[in-house]
Amino acid sequence: MTEYSTLVVEQEGPILWVRINRPEAMNAYTATMGAELAAAFDHADSEDSIRVVILSALGRVFCAGADVSAGAGSFDTESGEGAKNFGGRSEGRNANFIAAIMNCRKPSIVAFNGSAAGVGLTLTLPCDIRIAADNAKFGCVFTRRGLVPEAGSAWFLPQIVGLSQALKWCLTGALVPASEALEKGLLAETCPAEQLDNRARELAMEIATNTSSVAIALTRRLLWRFSTDADPSGALSVDAPLNIALGKGADVHEGVSAFLEKRAPNFPSKVSSDTPATPWWPADPTARRQG
Image (cartoon, rainbow, N blue to C red):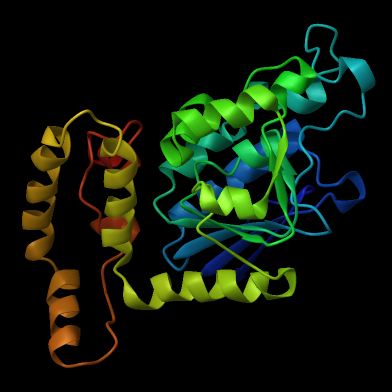
């Protein structure tokens, strides 16, 4: 496995824990961190024993945003000072952590152990489920730094919370409490900080023990790909063929048998070898292998 300098990456049964590990710098984002996040999610995608990724952090905050230790030039890539934040883009495919999270066929849960601002928030938007400690705060602070929302968040955030709320948060740049983030749909739930890891683990294990990994991989792609279409025709064009292909497979046979026999399922199919091609998904690794 990749050696990490800004993350702690550990597998616990079917769960891959990915924890941001720069607590001395309030877990501030760097280009190295972006490359390492991409590597961690690429690893999760390729390893069949991993069923769910949990993204969290060590220390009292989740991520305070981009590292500004270079001072006023922290985002100035032309002078070279901004390389710490953005230089990772020249490091190749592994620098694109947004694509790595989106293309990972394993579902991801974010457990905000503390506050998240700027890229500390937007790097989590391609993840599937977000929960948080009830004392956390969140901020799209870009306009207060003279920047615009990055990491694709001008697309992700309105899909998650709606355009009106995304405009309010991005135009004011204000910090909002976890209660508001929960009410507006950014978070699925909140809990006391001391219960956060256990709750994230419970959610991950609910997925890992009760669902087909192949069905999960396809379901998250269906929802991310077609939920923003103007009409259901795109989804209708692919969900029936997918279910026809899956219906004759081992996982469906096992799922129905387990239900009828009132026992826990033991799905045999593997994401790496048994996932049907999804040519409607950009950069589909399955389609590339079969093509």
